Image (cartoon, rainbow over all chains, first blue to last red; front, side, top):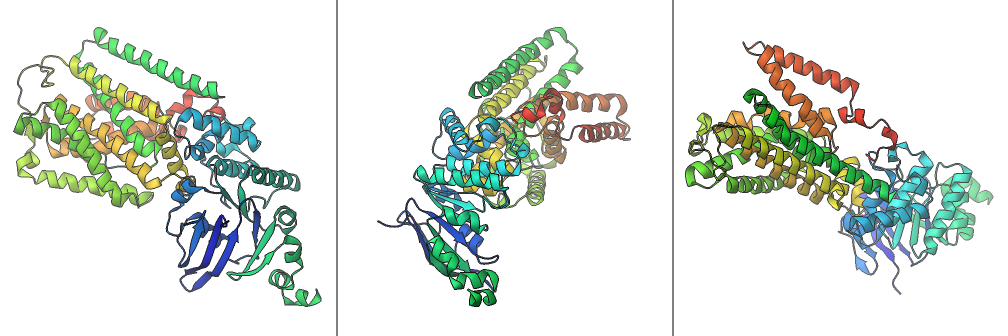
Length: 243
Length: 326
């Protein structure tokens, strides 16, 4: 079976800076894949390329057996790519439910159906009680969950989570982890960029480590964290030698 | 919560119907022509501001060039009538459609601009159109066009003896503009527009084609504005470029919505009811002699309102703002 998502030899240059060089990764159906790496490794760039914010300088992106390299973000969403933003981008003047309805309208054009769908998603994400509050009145952890809810309302096949667990308290992060698991259990494939290793490693099936724009290591989380290349990328060569 | 929402929508509709009926009864008691004139203008600007609000309030694309569509409506109707004898009703429709098409043609390049750049583009385009019309001899150039009086008739939409027909038409127009907004508010377009206004990047990631959403809002907004312009031409029965396409119209369409509450269903209505009579009254009582005292008073009031209620006067009517749906 073809993987759900595949990047083939993707390059992204910004002027003289090479953010991604020859990145080829694939994500299978039903997987939770972690995309990790130190600051400036090119995670967010790769993420934006997959979501369709900008086209890659070179290479191609395949989703669900189809070349989507040149498709804009909205069309990728219609095909089943949902995403969240690292810096939350709620619709601040709209209520929580209205935020989610915007997402639900991709698949349901009848308002009543979209509204019901949005409410179900809010319940799934544990935000139902806040449905009629303005998005600007949510606390940061709720805003993160709203991002996830909104993306889920588009009924994605692939959910891209950009640092949804970063900067949360341990308790909040734990509920976040549970939510991601629940999402996967509904059959959605998850690709997540994450900084906090100790949270993300037990959660993901597979980890892809980026460093300096390239794929450094790929494998089971337990193997990846012990890999000397990964340790040196994060902590410097001295520590890798020690390990 | 579902029912709460439906209840609020139904309540809005009932309140609007009641207000419309009350407004329709007012001329039975107010016979003064001067006051009736103000009422016609108030209703017209309520409709215009409501139309402006669709593009600028809901979709967030601030336009200060709506005078263009207003003028297009006025000129299309008048030219069709004076040159070809086409009834104003068809002129209204034609003017609306032409405006909608032009709005989309202009939107094609302009919607790539964001924020201030977009606003500047709208002003400049409207000014260019004004200059073009001023130099277009066939369309009367700077002298304008007199609409020949052919006697009172609904068919030709001309009334010399009474202002009441104009009043009822303006009332109808305001109702239509309100109803269109009400209906769009709970449609996928309404949701897309608000999403585009709040955060275009997030909207795009949720499958909203931002560009098309803006085009849709521009077309609806321009159409309704042009119908208002057609009406105005019939109402004053004389048009010239400055009096239907001048920059002041762009402001007069934007101000009621801004003062009343931008991007809200009732804001433009409330704003028009407060501002337009104020404009007219200050002009009659303290204006004149070119001193501009009326404008100073008018401007001061707007500044005071903006300071006290930056989100619009409509905020006064929803004390539980935190819980307000919008």
